[in-house]
Image (cartoon, rainbow, N blue to C red; front, top):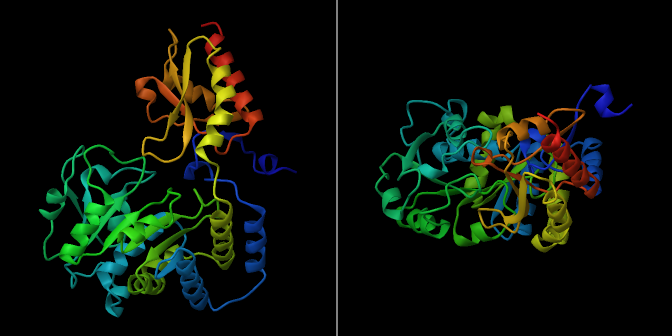
Length: 367
């Protein structure tokens, strides 16, 4: 019996991207094999976390690393670690009034909703959110204006979700971090670049294990060994509710090794696969399709569809595509502006044909 039948689940075509709400990504066979090996073996878990993290640091050319249950957990635990600084009392009393140095400065345009609010994870870690600048602008000076004796960390979100224009760069955030001796955390959850941000000088960099890396449900943090050890200490406190199993630790390590060896699909390959899809979409009345690059500048290309139908809006179409025996999920961030995007990284040719056929039916049926 299939999983769909067993649990009465709807099949999904994931043209939204590597999104948590859809199970994120597909994993390689080597990942399953590593998970099975972990599931059949016992370890001293603290020893496994510490030594796998140090091995991860060597792989990624930084001091150390640690595996977490998710990138979100990585944010909360990194904040808690930098507030507690390895203190045993803080470990068991993470929200104690004894510690006032809790402010976390973040550009206002980076305090976004990625499935939950960034500020939720900061506050879960015991931090107090301090937004710098404006929603559409943040400079070095605007960050520096918010620094006080209670500033525990700086946080920079590297993501397509954030405002891109008129924002200071990571290099500029590093300069502030060095000038004031305040640790800098970079959340790069969905990014594919595993080396640049630590080399630029970020103290801690957070990634999702299940997005670009195509590993199991997991996350990881890399960077300065002192701070990594403080994060690992949190597994006896706040991190207990975010623990990750041995099978997913080993599965993620296998995924990272495979990713470093094989990489991911190139932008050129995506554009080549997109061309016949775009041609088919443009044959449907009420649609104007083109290839567009990820707005954050990543080497990711998607099909953007502008809806020009007299009786149906893009928002209505996104909802209708989710109906029926197979739910088709799109990127609908611009649906209010009449545009949909299709991310094909997890989509087969057969599924692209199904998307074309569904759109034909939706846009040509009689009203």
